[in-house]
Image (cartoon, rainbow, N blue to C red; front, side, top):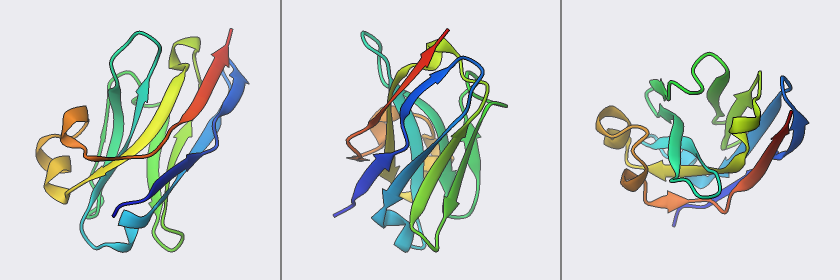
Length: 126
């Protein structure tokens, strides 16, 4: 069973930075697709960034150039470095995992990910 536990959320002013972490058991595997998603109140959950075991990454246009996804496989941890935060980035942030092929064909497509963490809240004030 895949275990995903997010941390690092909090409150920050616009223009600030946060780094989210996800302790991910799937990172002990040699084949995976893992990523970050978010859901704001009243909106659908959206994909932000994914990374495959072979190293390929994908970003949503809304975060490209501001957010960076990375893994530390020695610590089995997924990260999301978020810079230049905006009030519209306020949401619950989730990490999710799927089979490696998901990153090649369905990256950022929320329904393609079957394993989810509980989420961590990010609030950006203006």
